[in-house]
Image (cartoon, rainbow, N blue to C red; front, top):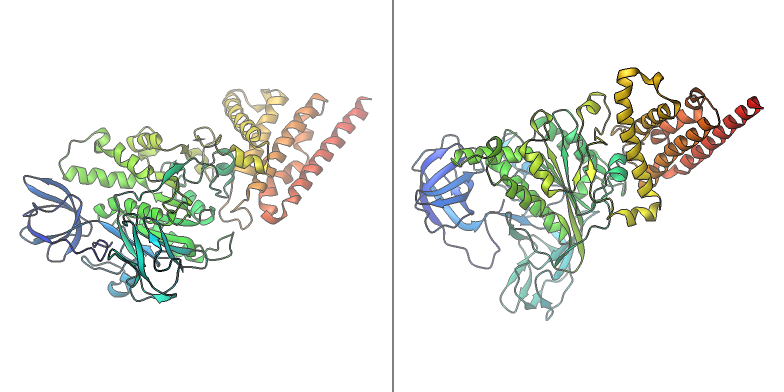
Length: 600
């Protein structure tokens, strides 16, 4: 986390005070009357990073982002006169940060496995040189969002260097020639005296501006069939993944982060268990992007803020992640932010609120919880950037309701600000059905807006989706009857519904992240599998009317093959699914002829 603001504008005067009270990560200091709200401060002799969150007659209240064990009243506090900001520039991609943008891998080299309080590190390496290609020349006009040049950050990401959003209108008086530069090197000087570097800073609590909001028009393809076909999320949309312990929230987010078609992934591990973040940190560098064949880390930023880290850093890690996402959105990229989990973030708010002696609201959460959630999710969206290009941020936030109770405050307030709800079901998880997304409790309000995109793949997508959801709802009602009187008491038409629903569950909705073929499914394959299953249902209904016994329909070898298509047919051989559909039609034709001859 860079405590400094943009260089070249003059450093604000530091203000010094003294600690008068300490309550865990919350510190009260006197003598900071001329400091501003949300200013960055250095607390104590160890110069721990903190932020002023309240100013009143008793002094300045500060939340400390590092472990302040051993700190004593009377130690000095220095306000730097600038808001909490992140450093933005080449070198972000592939880096693992903590909640206040300290580079964990570089800190490990100097401090070992545990970060010492007060330890700092360069968020962006000031020694590494980047190949810069200018996009302007002396005399060109510069304003907010003007493209200054490009840097090849990774094989997958071209880093576009823009003039900061607050840049005043001016003209370039000097432009650095093509060559290699560090993030601290000045690449443009203007006639107004403004000097622009490869890197810039931005306050984490302030949304980066854009020209205007755009309507969602394209889905974020995740490769998970239950999401893409039944409950789609748009690029620039917001989704919640609520579920109790063990239902697969983190694994669902991992799968989306690995294989979704976003250009940039920002994964924020906010208050999660250390072993889960370890899985991310060790697994992601080994993964290969299915679209490009390159390492997924070449388009990923990881923010690791585990449950044993200071609670205040957990609170700010969400803002750090979304600010990095906005920076790449402004380059015209589609960014996906994984927040795991917003419940742990809300618990951090609750703990800090308690230490501030604020009046609690529902279940002890602060009254401003809905406002904070809204501020976070509203920073997502699809926009026209200051440079005039479309860019988007899709936010997928995991919610961990205690006991799986979706009526608790974080889940309920989150539903007010998102339009896609992927509810995880404990019964499905216990049955080892993953992803355990309930087709009864989940919903997506983006479906109608994404219909045009899906119609280009298959004009029957809307009907296909509606029929599937209706069939699964009918199956749920029939299961209640089966528990009472048994399946044999149902007529064959209703038993066929149960058979088809089971095929949809096993052959379409269930998907293994460990299956080399099935872990990622292209949209064309998704639609063909579902069409084939529903074709089986239609042919089965027709056969029943012709007098064919249900047992013969269930016993068709082609039926068993349909449920195995997901794992047997790779994404580049989907014609085999069409062939399986033709075999199915032929099998039903032979079955119908058999019983016609017998009747004759």
